[in-house]
Image 1 (cartoon, rainbow, N blue to C red):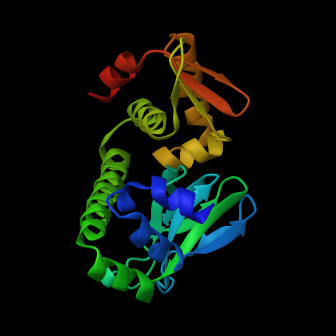
Image 2 (tube, one colour; image 1 turned 60 degrees about the vertical axis):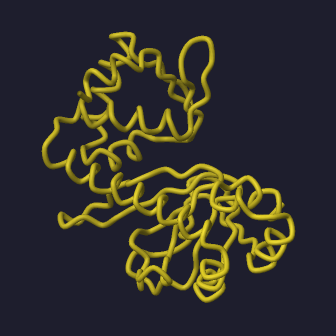
Image 3 (spheres, rainbow, N blue to C red; image 1 turned 90 degrees about the horizontal axis):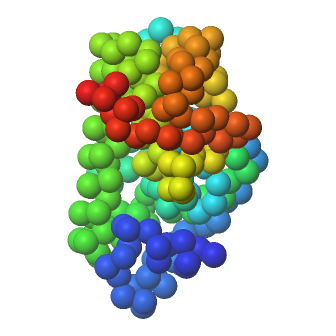
Length: 225
């Protein structure tokens, strides 16, 4: 499974079959049950992880004492420590949202990989830049936008990263509780529930057990504009 997941990851798409096999040898397969911690914010950045199966929450402790849900990572996403790029500590806590398998590589092996394959370095740097932009946007929105706007933005982000298009819209099939979404937008679960009910009544979304369907992306973007 390691080889298949790595071959599909955009970070390694430019490697030859021989190089990919060498990279594969440096990764370990680790399994985590739902709600278990993979790495703690502030811990020594000893490993880099790729999501092989399942979904991973990225959480950051806010100055107000709450955990903010920064992202929900799908299969193929990268997270953890980037010691070769100057990250000495894990920037977020990573928690398995579902039963999850990750591929882990030590910081030393990852540094050697970057030195040997410059194209991997460029792909990883681009990913890190996107993650930093996303984190800054989450913090900015919590500070400046109302809850309706923040919920619309979060739903669009989840639809882009986790959604599957169908005849009715974009289906986000994930065990995302109101508490999770509240942590993602920096609001109370009660307020998020009211906003979700409003969006559903207006025909912008539909909801069910462990799924949300975006019915009108353009209308959600208009809220976010």
